[in-house]
Image 1 (cartoon, protein in one colour):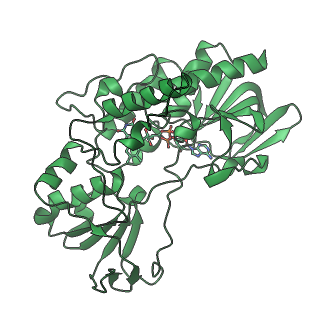
Image 2 (cartoon, protein in one colour):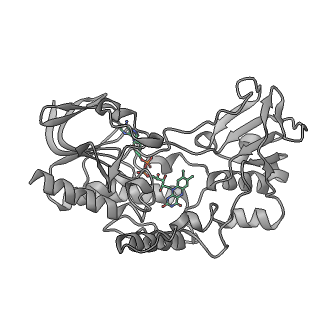
Image 3 (tube, helix red, strand yellow):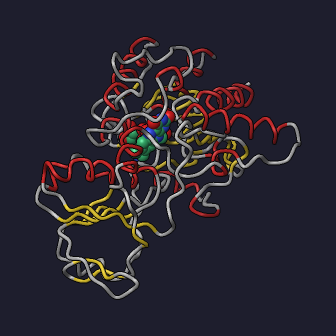
Amino acid sequence: MNGPYDTVVVGGGQAGLAAAFHLRRAGLDFAVLDAQEQPGGAWGHMWDSLHLFSPAAYSSLPGRPMPVQPGQPYPEAAHAVRYLAEYEQRYDLPVRRPVTVGAVHRDGDLLRVESDSGSWFARTVISATGTWWRPFWPAVPGREIFTGRQLHTTGYRSPKDFADQRAVVVGGGNSGAQIAADLALAASAHGIEPTWATRRPPRFLPDDIDGRALFDAATARRRALEAGREDTGGVAALGDVVAVPPVRDARDRGLLEPRPMFTRLEPNGPVWSDGSRTAADAVIWATGFRPALAHLAPLSLRGTRGHIATEGTRALDEPRLHLLGYGDWTGPASATLIGVGRPARDAVREITALLG
Ligand code: FAD
């Protein structure tokens, strides 16, 4: 038996670390349980060419600014991993790895966190398990009969893996646009024939808008709502796809022309709405993620759209549980490096008050 702790944090990516920073500051007794072998959460699993969509100064957790990566106005994912690893060390955060949490149960006055390294008892729990671990695969007819390779964003690494292949990228969000651009820019070097399929025409944000402006829009929205003013619409009102340099480059060279989503897959590839067919060797589903909440199932808290009903980060039906980092429903911009600090601070404030 481990504990009881004031708080057990499930997940040691950026959200878990932001929570740990504030728990440490508040002087609480806590542990962070993380399923990964290495620090960095999802950042260590993203594709080779991925860069952050904000400069380092706009990608920092509380307390310690992310250092600039020399020569890279938009840092690489590997830089984020190094930053998170250093962050853990600098604040001496008690992260246990690899520890996978299977379930959180109510156990009298405590919560019991069941893991592959035993039971951890806690007065409160912060769940910060992210979304990367629960990729969403849409129910497109024929997916099961397509004989080529199918992978999700989570399985994509590099254009080299598609040399001399016809690859169809599905999805009009940031991941879809970036993977389509990655393939398009490497197409002639590697003999790739890429196709990009989107349900709706992608809405590119203006070129001068990056993560900085997105964060400012999210902040303006929060302030408007807090002041009882009209909802500014925040980030979603601006568009969907950040025109990061490779996306802009591919688009400007005419290499990023999406086709309206195909209607079904056949063994050889997609069938388009006009009845035409494209042979394909691979389909890459850049179709998003859902919150990884399976470990919370025993608490029976499921709300709408796979989310748990929250007020701020606190689960409405279990005040000892906070959810952090999954998306705007756990705080504006809370699924970003710069945005998670504020809801983490608020969560720890509430926990401190609850623990008295
Ligand atoms: P994660 O990084 O996923 O960390 C969760 C941790 O919890 C992981 O270590 C995981 O192993 C662990 N875990 C999960 N389940 C369990 C369990 N049951 N038991 C124990 N541990 C568990 N944000 C930005 O600010 N800037 C960007 O440029 C940016 N680019 C992005 C690009 C892509 C392609 C994607 C997908 C997201 C991007 N984001 C960006 C959004 C966000 O910052 C990242 O997704 C980030 O990884 C989210 O951090 P997190 O801590 O919430 O989750």
